[in-house]
Length: 345
Ligand SMILES: [Zn+2]
Ligand SMILES: [Zn+2]
Ligand SMILES: [Zn+2]
Image (cartoon, rainbow, N blue to C red):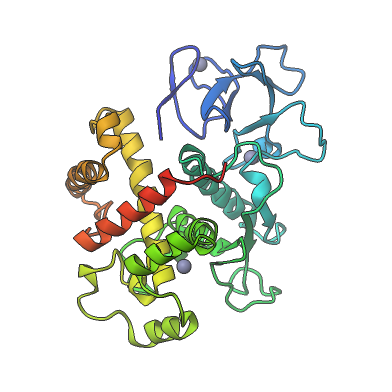
């Protein structure tokens, strides 16, 4: 994430709706990927923003959320009056039962994480900022642990045909940590789920229908037949000993699709965190480093060692609990090359 500033000079953050220093109404414009200050008015009408390139923008409908309001903007002159939500919020197709206590906050937490995902996808030119026809859509699902009336005893997080399902229980920190321990995972976050599932979506978009890339994928990750059997085997037997030499996580060893999705999530973690580090002057990424994946990886390794050391000084666990083997690095390089060559937009 880059750094943002209010017109008064105050540093502001990606989720801020109001500047703490001057009280200005703030909004994030997905097209320019910048935070803008609303046009001053008497406060009686809904705030309006004007971009440098002459667009008039309005706030997302979810700006009214009591917890974690959405600060994203959309075109004010949108011909379609039905569109009341920003690029990120309107990709949500299914909501949990909002009359159930806690679900409104869970939903807002998932939306917050989704905006972070969309920021990365916009930056990597993987989504169109103004698209109103959704192809990647999200179902925020609940199960009987939250709503005794829900159909599913356990609702699974996953991807199918462009629809990403996220169980809203993942927004509860205590539940998520419990599941992390139960599954013996090194890392489990809401943004991690979203990045992983988006990987399955982008495999369909970037690999599946392209003969050459599909052949290269199979050479790098393996043949993708036998998915259900492979997952069943993984859940019964666990990962093969020594998986660390070839895979970024134990789960990545279950099947080439999961290896791709885990590597994709890792690539998004890396690109997002490197951008943040670079914007604070913690890593040096010039055009030369940016065009050389090995150099980018070297910066990443240096940074993660420091991040973990900082966390340990505060008595916290490692922020980066991964060991990046040569084989995993090569898979990230493959994804980087594919993303750079992407022609979606
Ligand atoms: Zn300000
Ligand atoms: Zn929104
Ligand atoms: Zn997966």
